[in-house]
Image (cartoon, helix red, strand yellow):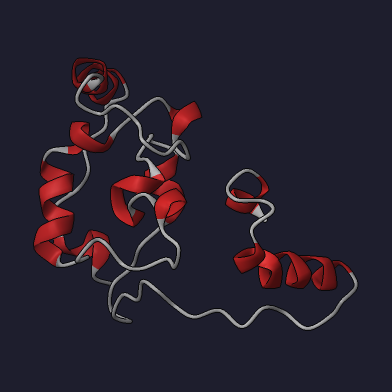
Length: 132
């Protein structure tokens, strides 16, 4: 249930998610997902590499807590990814707050820059990082 334990846990729209989760526990039929974000097969992406460094969910996925129907907000183009890799502080937050929606990035920019420096966060811009 990950996010939906705390995000709209009683929403009627999420009833299929809750039912599928309960059925999974009983070895029932899994939820049929509709993919919102889809990278080409030649692109490698690792969520944990980003989350463990403090990149918040909303940096890529937007304010899903305010979406009636989840939709893609980021282009996921190579330029979009490289812009972030070249300037990661704009998306780095305290690791304990990666799932928080509405994070005050502008107010936290100095702290984010310190996290990048102190954490030795240096995202690679080498082609082989994402193209494997």
